[in-house]
Length: 315
Image 1 (cartoon, rainbow, N blue to C red):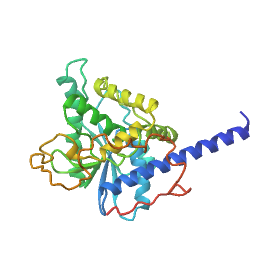
Image 2 (image 1 turned 180 degrees about the vertical axis):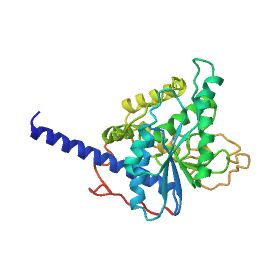
Image 3 (image 1 turned 90 degrees about the vertical axis):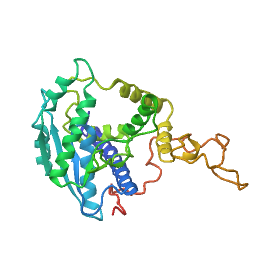
Image 4 (image 1 turned 45 degrees about the horizontal axis):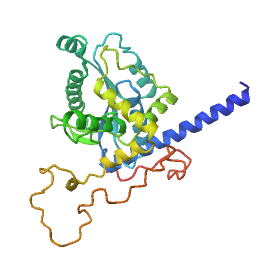
């Protein structure tokens, strides 16, 4: 490859990275605004696992911290669970080089999990519960007002499908909620971000990724199957995943069947036209996603060419 060809290739890669970074920043900024995730004076504890999602979350929150019209602080927290082979030097070295305030918490949950879970069984559920309890405790010790997790749009859809198929509930991961002990506000700023965008971003950024399978546990097979199903749909039917996620934001309780959520018993015909009346699928087929294009920011880029977005009304 000639010097000119190499230069042109590098220029194209940089252009693609800037476009991708701008899209992710826009998604995170919009999620923060839509759900009032971060307020003036917040101390946000960013849970950093060493995976692509949490690295991306930290990078984008650091950028938004610089341009947001409010003041908030960030502290990265990693839980070293003493898994054999865990490269404990990677995160401290990275965070020091980046100038990020951080804490490494050492708790041997690995031994507890191996003692309680039979050989060959998935350890993720118990491991997650133990990790969650420790992180809640640390957040309290640090005086953190928000706990930021790296779950993205695809995680939310997978959880929705898992709960529908195996749990009998219409339930997912919300972008913002109170922790199960009632003491913390948990936020997911990547709620609008696509996993495939995060994967590309992490690759471009060359984050020092730490594998998540050091404990030897197999990934939850049900979640793995749902993930593959969604990815297959995304390849085969472009726009279907976007439509599904949009549906999560457009709930019509009167057209479901939860009598505790909607008062079906008191329904009476009053002779008045009702736009939410029983039309079921009589409406024309929605066309918003029929001709979906994956290059969502090509036609109109509201943020200009600079790569800088505006985060509005965070307070």
